[in-house]
Image (cartoon, rainbow, N blue to C red):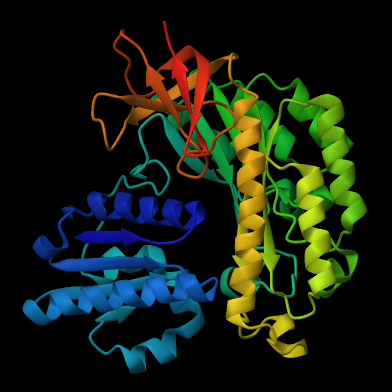
Length: 430
């Protein structure tokens, strides 16, 4: 079996669960697709760029099948959930297109049978370094954001129980995981569907008790469920790192209303003010969308001004993608050209680069705790890691200058001495 996982960390967790089931079914997983009897592709279908990457990956696998007709290609994931019929018609080389509800039955569909003692989460195989792992706490989303196809792909919000998540976190700790990265489509909404109210912090309280887990990192917070108490709890926690990801998508009330986001600019400002009041050292990652059909040049200018004043530590920019089946697709024409969307994206990235570099330069001279991730791709003997301010494979890294041996998964204290390539830092470790 050769396995390819595309898209977000949530999709990666699904792939890791599949890998565990395949291994429990005595399948051998290989890294070289040329050696694979079966190529399994877990796709992303969220926006145009992701769909294009998924299609290209399927076509590359089809080329390998041309050279070896005995190969099988199995495709699953979000792209299949949205476009299964079209894909079956357009890419007949693929042997199986499996939708999400049958994704975990792929081994059986290939004639494989898992061992009797197989357990989905216990047998999960990590593809991240063994000291860091994602914990997916729920599936689906109850929000109806105008631009987003996730509810139609993944369905309504469905939380896992606190007990099952704590059991999985304990197993991850037993494997040597020291950093738990909590992910979902809407992390701060966790538990509302099964407990009647958000219970993220009840879950975190239990994970904090697990020996070996040192860092807990929060992704995909939604502004309506991040209140003052939420920020205070983060400030008081010894294991939740002072970092959170909260996509705001835009700053202007008119655009937020058209996007059906359920909050306005004032809410974003409140959260940032609470953050400054209780945890000024916290790093915040956000994301915005430019080129939404109703975004005027004035709206765009105001967004730029807001980003300049808010000074987010990290920021991603997406160009609006006109997705079939979404409220925005039904209500608005996609009137802004791709060229104009890219111009707006690049202008914001230019602003953010200056902010990120400035924030990193403010760290020079400070001693910080660093989690070693591994070694540089360019210089194999140069250790690299992250401070609490950086998420794995998303934000900047820290290069380690040291005469002492260090190993992945180790925490070290280092003094920041320089900034390189805007997003990365250099630390000296005695």
